[in-house]
Image (cartoon, rainbow, N blue to C red):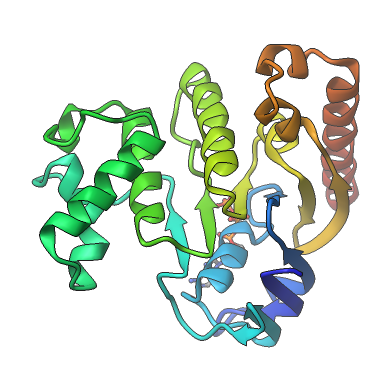
Length: 260
Ligand SMILES: Nc1ncnc2c1ncn2[C@@H]1O[C@H](COP(=O)(O)OP(=O)(O)OP(=O)(O)O)[C@@H](O)[C@H]1O
């Protein structure tokens, strides 16, 4: 059964001429990694904000475990591109921050935070300051923090967008590792085609003006990596290249239609 369900969602910002998103239906179930790919302005962040509960839809229904989503909640953990970490606190306190707000006793929350740091391969980083971390390490702290509250789903807004190409690839592999280890369903948005094709179990392509789903693809490259195949072998597999080129052609065709 799908955990998260969006039924014919539309969104409109106050004062805007038209809708930002229209007729978006999707579901996210266990063991799924759903990726939304689209050009700038296709409403990706708006879609994530709707699911996170930061923005209400103007039409349609969003449910998690059958319960309508109204506002943010710890059951939907969010990782942002520039993760808003607390620079004056150490890594452990950053990961445990939400648990502290929720009133969890110190030893319990620190044990949980250490467990999450091990999950993102940052065991032993507890007392490091945020400014002592690389961009990739900061993102790992952001993932550990989002997972600390044991959310039902993990929502990621361009999480690797600010990283260099090499770190970005490492983080994609780390995400697949975390996804496999925790079995958390993930919803991720990106405008990087290779990243989308590599990670997604289901890929939705968004077109702009207004944002809508133009194509859906079921993929298994991320699962293959999680099962042990190397990222390099997968990304040079003719089937991967063919899929990547297909998606690229769709994106270009859409762009041509709009500028024609
Ligand atoms: N708070 C807001 N108020 C009014 N309009 C907004 C608001 N946020 C976004 N928009 C508009 O909605 C459209 C979609 O924006 P959104 O940020 O969701 O797209 P995106 O696909 O995530 O883009 P990008 O890749 O550039 O981040 C844009 O035209 C944007 O100008």
